[in-house]
View (cartoon, rainbow, N blue to C red):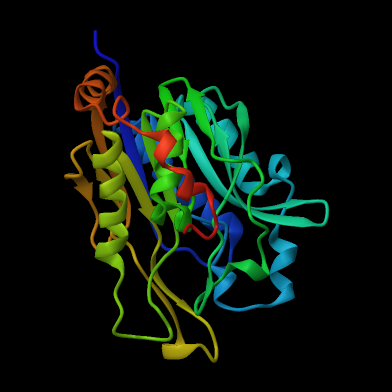
Length: 292
């Protein structure tokens, strides 16, 4: 029998109340699990508002050691109860260091480990370098109950090298929790379609399903351009061809899901020859910060 994996993405808006945000995600995890989902992806930093629109020291108090994070403590027993895998995006504190991280929870509620965001953006509306160190874990692939899952975080998704690395490590699906929306320096700039297309390209080039789970809604910030940040949702699941198997619009909230046949994809991936025909001997420029 083929190994069938049912992937799900959560799209929702979030506020200042961490407990309420966790409860919202837990409700949607239950909804996804009731529909048969096995791996369920919430958006990035759902613990609260996306605070990186400003540089303010008060937000450091909302970081926790990853095993003690309220989001992890709440969702690990839920994963065990429902028998589902949940990658949980958190603001992590380790001693004096702070990271944008994902804790991977397996279907028995066990904590499989941690991935720390590798690529940290720094620009209007997304001033993450003030808060987060660049990740020191390297890319991670998790051998979960239902399959080998690679997880990147938001800005990581723009980098084909990250997707390829996880695929070379044996990932059978790529998941990206994100928080992205309006651009305060240019209200005419809408990156929703390029955001999707970049990940759809990863799906094609690696013959692998890709899930992007984004937040939605308007988050008010006094003094901020247009009064706050609007997140454009548009969460999706792409199949191995880059076609959208499931998708949300900008303002939807809830769960989307789709099934993939992992055994078919393994054979299909081999037939395409993308990994057979790689030429690592020619890729030296990829490891140089200033290629000639």
